[in-house]
Image (tube, rainbow, N blue to C red):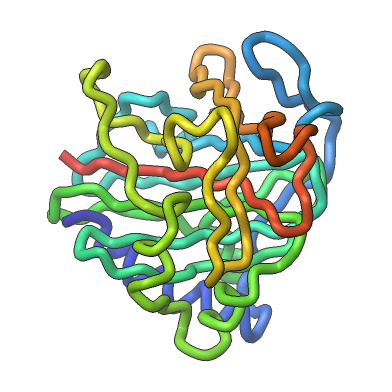
Length: 254
């Protein structure tokens, strides 16, 4: 339905990056920054991530908002940083429902990371072709590695069994909010779980955290902020070793 070049590029270069280290998941040097939620600085209280979907506009990578829609030949990147040292996985869910881990990366706090990275000195991006629809990327951030994802990268070029996502609430699809007249670019998984997160996935060995969310603000340059918040199972905003922050990124091609 969309991003055929995305589907062809990611399995190839991501696998090379994971196995050979020949390609770089781009990152910038650390710098001081904060995670704000509802206008309050929660950097010290909560583990979290800021995510930016960037679009090439007249040769300049520009932050887009929640209602952005994409057309053929549009180019995009995903940039993020976190206030923790841990692990981030990107899982691609194609319009067909096929699920594939496209990257596994250990991260340092306060670094900018860009997906796709670089092939040597060659810049890479996600480019839309003529097929319309919605492609989904799931960002899963944890304090410890997720064995199922790492095994998929090492043994089956990232492909996952159908039961991995369908059997867990935290990685299931999120319906469009009927109160909004657009489909969000960035969605938190799952919705409506501020009280207690979501059930533990036996297969993945993780429980997704209850999350606080601020949408991106292109005018100020602030990306979407997603942070763990206290709930009935976790009294603080810090991630436990078997907990995850899960964010869904939808790229809609009209």
